[in-house]
Image (cartoon, rainbow, N blue to C red):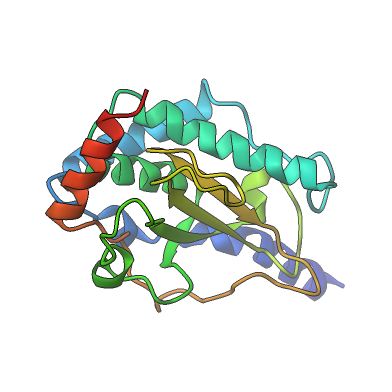
Amino acid sequence: MLVLLGGFAWRCISPFLHSDPEQDACTFGPVSNARYRELLAEAKRRDGTTWPKLRVSGWLFPGSVAEREGLQAAITQRIDDLTANMTSIYEKIAAMHAVARALGAYHHGYGGRVTAANNFKYLDWPYVTPGFGYEVDVMAFHAVEPFIRTAGLFFRIGTSRFQLKPPQRPGKFSVILLWPNWLDRNPRYGRGNWPPCPPVPPPEWAERFDAYVATLP
């Protein structure tokens, strides 16, 4: 019994022993690591002070689709709050990464295929939806799940008004949360197999995006 209890306790605390420091050594085009760390510190400060807590109502998992969508909306609001008044896509990506890291998430690419080369290579504007994939322990949402612990977080930049799920928001990020379950345990990619930092667009893509955002009401 003690062995079982010890094993359960280890599964609960072990995710918090992996800080993934390489994921906080990122630069984002012209955005320096020092600036990113300022954003990360601010995200952590707001997480502990002004941002509403990300909690599930049940003990194990969100009880409804509406609750999962509520978590998505709350994470989206965090990005909106941190990126307020930002005009550069590079700084916005840095802020998105800071919000994810403050939550305890770690970057794993997007479906295993995202690189700086192919995530932004299609410039037939505005039909582009760059995405960033993360994994996060469900305990970040004050949930307890001893076996299938990893939820997926996917962030997309809205570059058009086409309706996706969730609907794109032109010039802003949208968030999809994939909760683990016994039938679909969520994309479990594993540590160490993915680039530690999100890809950033080439200058011509960034210039076109920033010009597009400047035209939005």
